[in-house]
Length: 203
Image 1 (spheres, rainbow, N blue to C red):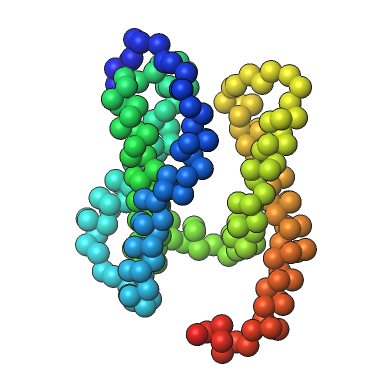
Image 2: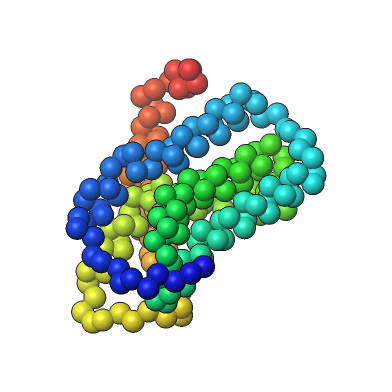
């Protein structure tokens, strides 16, 4: 990957204001999720016998693409900026490509082609965390803001510091999510069961 010798200019507009908050910014992920959900709905729990060689190739492609998307920008964070064309391609395609990777994992595990990965993801120990995932999604940004805006000193990046912050934010997020789930989500689910008969919910 070549380096871009031209210095990067500050964008004229702040990305979060004119792009990141727009609903169409993530339309590709929604479409992929809807498509895979519809296919699994039509299968009605049936298993698919995918050729073993093809299955391994698809898994390797998904894992390679996923790791490339997550870790492919590491050099950029160290000051080794890619050329503009590569940067544009990455920013245009990485969300769509990563959604395909996650979609393949879901589809393969749901249709009996997940192998050992399906065993790991189906481990019963994940159930408590899975029940709190939505609350974690709602609360993690607040915790990140509180941490970031509460800093009274410069934060110097290192792999170790970032790992410590990541672990700490994750633990605090799920602790807060547990409280939110116990106080809000679970009581509301119980109230829904009382107010809406089971026959209506099934419809």
